[in-house]
Image (cartoon, rainbow over the protein chains, first blue to last red):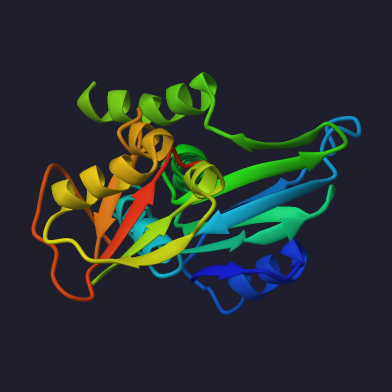
Length: 151
Length: 79
């Protein structure tokens, strides 16, 4: 499942649904990203996507993850629109035979979502608004997966 | 007519999100946009700005057909 939503979601319910009916999956890893208040600096986070294109690009990242880690299944749900502090922004679940693949695939997917998935993020706070670009750390996090391929 | 879409900071800079513009190629479209809005023209050539035509990333110039969708995509950040 790869989906965008402009509605709040419950990560627990998503995990329950994702885990259901699996007899060969030995491990499920999940990640939930939450909007931070940044000590009052961020009142609202606004996320923009390019409908159709965004899902397709995430789909390509997901295909890479499936092949690379031998996943049984994965789920990615990403919020768009206006998000308040404490609300989940992104949910990623990976299912594999064993834990290492599930953990690593979840990590890999998040590193790609942070700096390669077609989303644009704007912070609204008391000091005004600003667009957020991926940080040097975000790029470094993603690039370590390239190194591991060649090494 | 090509449909031109701007995302993220590009949209704020230009003050529009979507426009139909008559242009035969991507390069011609870029010059047209730069001519009417110099700041936008510079931003479209800025670091990390990618272009998708009909929802596929492209590099360099390419012809635009009637109804082509051209999206200018500034550096992306999800999660």
